[in-house]
Image 1 (tube, rainbow, N blue to C red):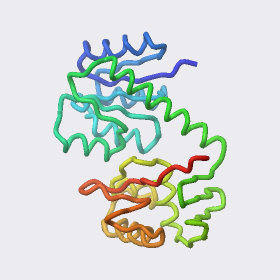
Image 2: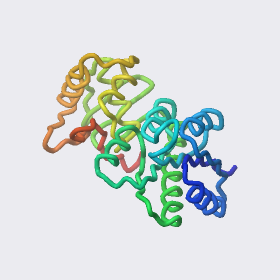
Image 3: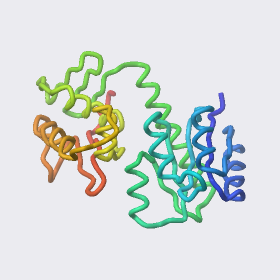
Image 4: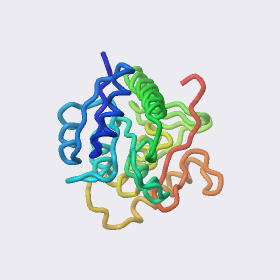
Length: 235
């Protein structure tokens, strides 16, 4: 079955060029020129990957990234003429997996699509096979909610465990404190940002993580946190 890629780009010429190159590689593509319509299309067709511009009518790319990531783990590639580090960091913090600045080579974009699709396919396969997350020095048994560090079981609170699993299931993906709160506490309004900060601090302590040279959870200053544990070679 051909993978379905949704392109949300208000520049018709760029959108069609991207679509043509992807179609040549065997992908099925859909194009939307409006942000809100693009998001509604995502909800209906459930594509395997999204290519999203930031500056869109009705709903910008930042909002699309955030809303899509709340519902799905599909790869998101942002394409934009905005080249500032702030825009890149913000996009990645909201859930984008990659950021490509315009002008770009269509062949490079296709290569990035292939790379993300390979990783996503492996991730899906492992999720179907087992619910055991293995990293160097850390084992997380998702079914039994047990965590073993360096051969010894460690006791985590329910929220600490949920935070660890969320981060470990998405290695190298940056989560903002607001996203962690919404996903783990299941609430939209973050009244006290220290709620997440304290739980992350306690989790790090139990994992033996230092802030200068972390082994598992790293701080992305001004954005949030990401999991950096090294995958076990047999996992």
